[in-house]
Amino acid sequence: MGAGFSHRLEQRDAPHSGGWVALAYGGLGALGATLAEASGQSPLTTTGWAAGLLGAGSFAAVVSFGLGSLVAFATIRMTRMLGRARWARALHADLRPITHGLGDGPILVMALASGVGEELFFRGWLTPFAGVFLSSLAFGVLHQVRGRARWAWALWATVMGVAFATVYELTGSLVGPVLAHVAINFANLRYLRDHDPEAKPHPLGGLLSRS
Image (cartoon, rainbow, N blue to C red):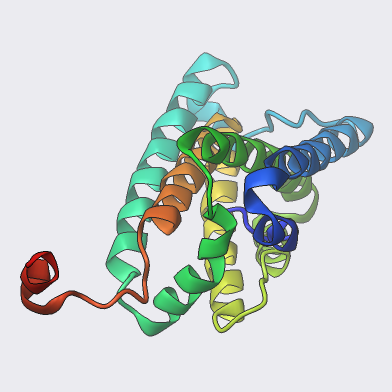
């Protein structure tokens, strides 16, 4: 989930900072596209590892879409399963203020802006230039946030960077990584907003609280 360089802005005034956040991620994406074009490569496609099998047209994009869907589904399920871990609850609490007061519309805008912007920069430009692992490491390092789970979040972002970059390099299409990134961000931002990791259950399942 993209919650790195714009975290302080979002946390300070989340309901009013969505526009600035979208602009920041838009600028990051534009920078990535510009750097890619300047180096003679497309920010949306590359020569994939499976180019001999998939080609470089619509079929590669369809395969990328399918792999991106699988990555999104598996990641969202995994984050729910890992949510009981102490480091995951700490991370949830640290990131939850980002979503304070946000409706589904602003969350969707944030997910789209961060997913598209970061994919254009980190995968569209940096991955072909620096490789899967170095680009993913940079992605993880720039996703540090202040709090109890700082390095856990950076490590998680690095792993996700490897997943996105692998789909991109395998298929040669950015469609799948963008889809996965946006879907994961949207689902997880909504989950952050709607679930309090530090909430204590009511006695008897809440029956006493309703009496």
